[in-house]
Amino acid sequence: MTPLRLAIIEDDPTVRQLLQGYLCRQPEFTCGLVAGSIEDFLAQLPDVVAKPELVLLDVGLPGLSGIEALPLLRRQLPEADFVMQTVFDDADRIYQALCAGATGYLLKSTPPAEIKAALLDVARGGAPMSRAVARKVLGYFKPSPAGSSVDLTARERQVLEGLVDGLSEKQVAARLELSTQTVHSYIKQLYRKLHVRSRAELVRQALR
Image 1 (tube, rainbow, N blue to C red):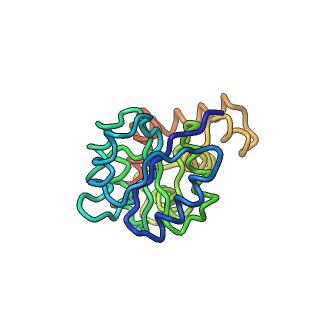
Image 2 (image 1 turned 45 degrees about the vertical axis):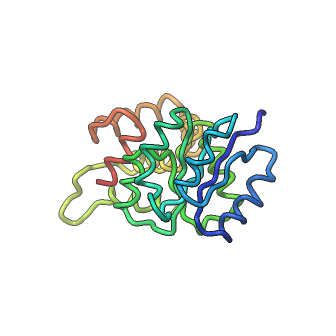
Image 3 (image 1 turned 90 degrees about the vertical axis):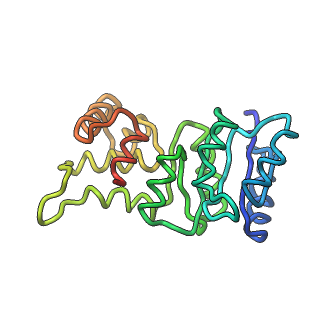
C-alpha cells in the first residue's frame, strides 16, 4: 500500500508534536506538511510537491478557525479528505463542520491509535466520528414522550449507527448479521424518511 500523504494543522505545540511524533512514524502515512495555523499551512502549501490527500484539522485555531477555513482548503485541495479534531462535542459545531465538508469529526481525547484507525477508515471511504459525537447524532432519533420528528425502527437506528461509525454497507451487514441487500434496503428507507440522498446529508439532517 502506498503511504497516504497526511497533513496536520494544530496550534497547540504539545498536541502537534504528539500527533506528528506518532502518526508520521506510521508506515501508512507520510507527513509532508505540519502547521500551527491555517495561514501557516497555506504559506507552506505551494512548496509541497505531493499535495496532502488527508488533512487532520483542528477546529479551534488562531486566525481562521478550522471550520471557517474548510471551504477555502477544499478549493485548494479538492481531492483531499478533512477530519476535524476538537475539544468541543456540541451539535452546532459538528453540524457546521459537516456542512463545510468535513469527512469525519474526532475529539482530542481520542487516543492516537484510534486517530490512526479513523484516518485509515477515511482513506477506505468511511466517515468516522468519536463515540461521544456519534451518540449526539443518534440521540436525535431517540423517541420522545411527545413523539419524535422522525420515526425510526430499532433496526434502522442500528444501521444508522453503523454508518455514523464509518462502516460500509458490507461491514454494517457483518456487524448486524444481515445480508448486504437487507442493509441496503434499510439505508434506502433512512434516506426516504429523512429526505436525503447521501450519507453526508443523512448525518447533516440528524444534526439539525
